Length: 555
RNA sequence: GGCCCGUUGGAGAAGUGGCUUAACUCAUUGCCCUCUCAAGGCAACAUUCGUGGGUUCGAAUCCCAUACGGGUCACCA
Image (cartoon, rainbow, N blue to C red; front, side, top):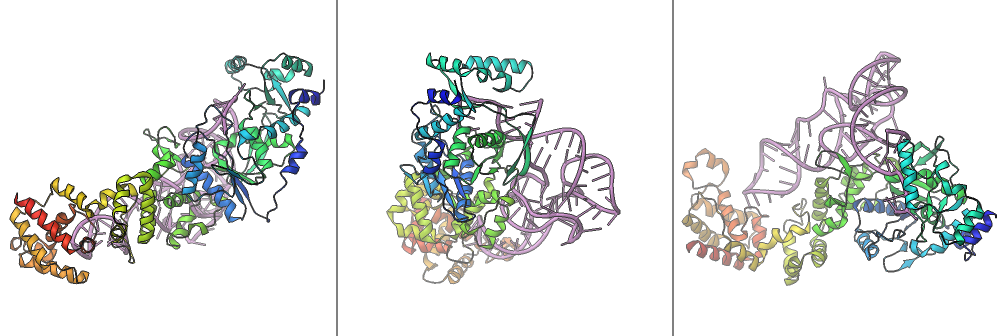
């Protein structure tokens, strides 16, 4: 029995050939230098920070070369699949402005190189597997998992490389008659690739980020077609990236070690291998001080949803990731005042080879810079869309009076060096709650903590004087002059130097006066510039709050 | 354990034989400014590039050895 006949026996229903597929998926008509990249997630859970990193780079590389970025869903592991996670993945990418030009879009597919979901590509894989069988480069394997265990144990006890290869690849030595017989008898089987490689020989490979290096040839007869009728990753990678005409495969560094498999697969299929870029993995220091890959199980930072829920601006995460990708980006973005990062030219040569430790502090820095750059309308709409997804309380506050919210967000914003105190939207309610009357009432009813060196009457005197004398119809400087004047009349020192020179002559400093007012109006020891806070609150509200506090003190 | 990749400060890193008494950024610390905070300004923070040898007038940069860290060895991707 010939190999061709065996192939026919196993896949009688497959009529198409590789040539037919080549015609159906012709080479893309793109300009010289245009890169076709792909992000190929499995729908097994939330978007990992490392995946965001990879997809971001893929997107960037395609965009800056006027190429194509597409998404392919690798759903061949039906056991681990989590329903709906594919859609969610795409949804999350979208919040980062990573939108594919074609491929799997979540609820539908776009493009001429589909289907883009692997479970829908069974026919295509079968054509390729049938071809490999017909040329003797793939064969059915009847080994059970206990057979494989046995082989492994034997190998381990002899301290030789484990796996299904060479002499250990039992089913490789079956003749086609035996194979046909066992298949006809209904014995379960899978299909393995027949490797011609020699572990002792090396192949030269080139990687866009690692450069040239040598690696041992593959000699494993890996499974390419599982008992569930779906291909394994390695095989699907070769077939899909060929027929989808990917020019550069960008993926995590953990794939380097399977590169020899992929190289051999491409060559056996008669396909030209794509360029490869293996990205460093994002790491974290564990409790023992060891570096390890960001882990879904142990690290919050591993899930992109964590940052989204906490309300970090999406842009800040991207900026941070670009910093890891190309360190010259930092200089560039400073020069460009934290704007238009999409104009930055990413380059694989400038990529570091070592996995960076995830740096939360740096993320915070970028988050503050970015939020400080937004105008009041932009930051309001960002806050609002965050609130709609994650924070009901904030949503209600904003909806109560959008203009009022804008004015709060605008305090010390429209100036050369805007305030940089907003980092993530999850802390917004805590920071600005006092601007809202019912929140404010809660705060003062919980009790205000004034400086213990002032007694009740001191505080009431100060507050009454301020209420009578502080006008908001003047500019900031005059306002402050009024406060100073008021303080001095009540024998507070106008500045620190005077006070330090003779503390016994004064009740305190002008800072103490301001603190009393600040605590009264905001319930906090720290707040933005009091003048602007009062402007937003308005004079009547301020007076009302002062009265409330005075009557509380009198009780 | 085999194989592969990597190793410059607390973190990200620049650096490819003399311009490096190791850039820049984050963090940290101190001072200044200031009604508080967030900022902003100024300053400090690796005599040394994992370690040991060598080549050279000269090395973080070249060579050799060694240590350490990470990845990977599935009908998972």
